[in-house]
Length: 146
Figure (cartoon, one colour):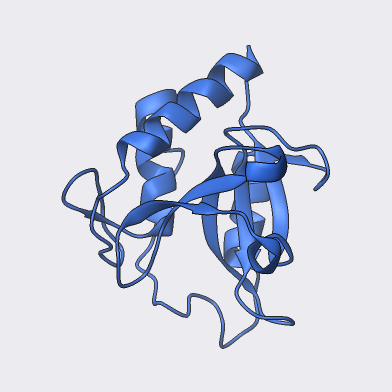
């Protein structure tokens, strides 16, 4: 069952490729940010979002150092060991060493050609290589609940 959900998650995330980056938006084809991408995927695969998302800034929770994004992922998704890689996983990233986690994406390919789908600030939703610099920034890996 979980594998089927992961396949649907990845297919839906890829449907968002090309959607322009718009902070706090979540509308395929019109605009989204990284959290909005995940929200849209959730709606398509799981139905209604589990909770309303309050307004947030581009440096969401950074001033008080709370791990809001990572804590929310732990609450709504299933945390996995970093080494247990599967397409459809949600990846949460720290954008700098010692910083809070504030970016996320969906694992697409695994292995030597690893990639992930994410809303790239200043651009759009893209599928990027999960290169060494990105892989080192992963703060958490999550699967989808049954």
